[in-house]
Every structure is written in C-alpha cells, then in structure tokens.
Length: 187
Length: 187
Image (cartoon, rainbow over the protein chains, first blue to last red):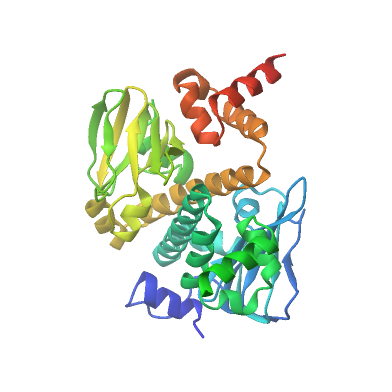
C-alpha cells in the first residue's frame, strides 16, 4: 500500500527524505461514503492508499459517471478547489478505502515556499492531465468497445469492483450495449 | 501583449524578479504554420503572446479539432511531452502568432532546483486541467448550443478568427447544425 511519501520517492524525487511539507490525516472510509457532495466547497485533497473513488456529475437528463480514481493517486473535486466555487460533482468511495488527507489550506501554504510541494503538485497534476487528455481522445473516437478495452487493460481491478451499470454510465452507453461488447470480446 | 514574465507576475508570484529560470526564444509564425506534426516527438513548450493554436487529432473517420489554445497561455502536445512518445495530435497556428518558446530539456533542468519553475509548471498545468474538466463536462451535457455559447462568451475572439467549419468540428456537429444554432441565438 503506497503512501504520499512513497509516491514522492517513486514519481517526484528518489532522494526525498520523507519529511512531508504539510500535515496529513489517515482516514478509512466504508464503501458508499461520500467524500465531497454536490454543492459543497472542496477543502481537501485525497491520496488513495487503497480503494476506488467515483466522480459523478448531474447532467440535465441523468447522473453520469465522470471519472474514477484509483490507488496510488490523488483525487479531489479539482474544479471546486481551483475555482473556489461549490462542487458540481460528487466523490464517492465505491470500495472500502484508505485515504491520506491533506487540507487544501495547508497545501497552499506549503506551495508558498516548498520546492518538493510544488514538484509534487506539478507532477500529480501533469499525470491527471495526461489521463484526462487520453480519456477525451477516447470519447472522441466514440468507440465504446475500444474505450472498454482500454479501461480493462489499464485498470484490471476496474471490472472487478465496479458494477456494470456504472461502467456503462461511464462509457455513456446502455448496460445492454455493454453486455454485447463484453460478449463480443470474450467470444 | 503578455510575456511569460508577466504571466508569472500575474498568476504565480507578484514579487517575481523577472529572471526566468530557463532560456526562451521569440518566434513569429504565419497563419497555417504547423508547430508540431502528427508522429513528431514534442520537444518544446509554447507560450502564446499573440494568436491562436488549434489542436487536431486523427480519428478513424475524420480529422477532429480537439482543442484551441489562446493568448496568454501555454500549449504543447502534452501527451507527447509527458509520455516521450510520438504526438498523435498536430498543433497549427490558425492566426498569425507570436510565441515564446521553451525547450522541454531546459524546462526539465529548471524543474530540478527552481521553485519558481515548479510553481509556474504547477499553476499552468492546473489551469489547463481545470479547462479540460470544464470542456469534458460540456461534452457530457451533449448540448451543442450551450457549448457554443460557452465558447463564444469565454473566448469572444473565437468566432472572429476561426472558420465556422472548424468550430463545428470542435463541437462535433455539422456546419449546418452550427448555422441553425447561430440563427437560434441571434433571433
């Protein structure tokens, strides 16, 4: 189980001494726990040591799954963090999860003077951004089967923990279409 | 016309002394210039002092407009930069443009030790990320008229310089649908 310290040593600076430039709190949450709700101001950043966080958005027609965040990465309602406005998404644990929690106020203070905090923030955001671009390209290809194959190969744990109906909502297709795709692939 | 120095003073650190932690080159390009082509490895980051850069992607069916970058912001084929792989997008100036060019090798060197370089990288990426999330949410709402209104209100220069057929390709609709939307709005 990776910690923020190990994440920094692995992705940011192999010589990192282990002294985090901000305090963190360890938190265990049960499956189904809402970390950030619609309309709430985001004040935290979460590092997922274990578990999966699902991001939902209310579209005019339905609730859509906008994103999933997995182990060994950061998550938050970033648009709320960065804009200072109420969140238009909710973050929900879809498996029992263990989190390392940073208060955004503490993080911003660390950003003032700490090289390692800025390196971490930069690299974590770059990684999120790269993932986002990839996802957007997949949306553009409009090929649900390719998107599904990408998801299952990148995140083998994906299909294991997430109800098929939520995967379908993420891909923007009906559960029936997803069943057909799965049958296609395995046959 | 904003420079990287002014960008840092405005968005990153108002006390910035003006000494950039990496060399930059000033470059003027004509409308239609390809900055980065499909299959090319991205080695530069561009700050747009003036002009518009269009990002295109080859989807199985057609060439799609993935994104536009405007004045006073950074652009690059980020997925190529961050992955070290050949670019699957092209960057094209769609207006005569003035750029401040940073070599990615120089930027990476500055990232080793420079607090201001890391602050700049973090904040520029955060801003790109926030824009991306917003765009993805708009794609999810699947309402071309709202997307169009968002674009034109956020970027009033948008409709002025960009051919309608490219705006339509960006919104993922036909030029005829875009004409109907424009008629709807003005009537």
